[in-house]
Image (tube, rainbow, N blue to C red; front, side, top):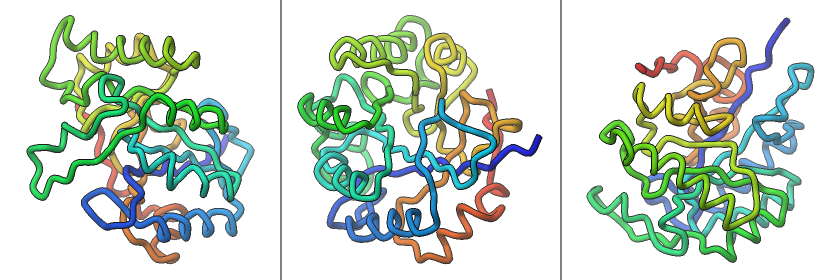
Length: 237
């Protein structure tokens, strides 16, 4: 059987600036227009069909407010769907995990009403832990709480199933991997490559970083060639 190589696209904030992991709203829409013109179909991870070409998975980390204000209308315009990874203890607050970074800029996160709007429009949410901490530095009950309690809170608060998890900062070790595997169906890293079912671990899914200004040729390289695949580095767990 020939398995399709599925680009799992990684985004963070989509704003009217170019700070760190953000891209401009107009550039994001150009990317979505390109995908639509090339007949890409957006799916969720549990909908992968090895017989269908041009499948993509759209993911957004952290749950920024601009995902619902700027991204959602564009996704609806092009009939795409996506999953957004929520930091459960920071809903309606801001990105405190970036405070020690150079050129830190405070960013507002989605509140409960925003998340409900996201869900009501056919999108999904996943867990990005309770507090967006480096899981490789935690053990025991602290590790377990970050992984399990975030799922429990999101499911109870938003009456939805949370099957997807995203490792904060892309950091994962053996302990966090094992805990995540107990309660989720899939987990995402920041490792680079298109996702290949018969090669990659579904709890270490690689992604294609799209958080930069990209021309159409660069998008083509990322999605249709081995450009991203050759940068894959196996997670050491």
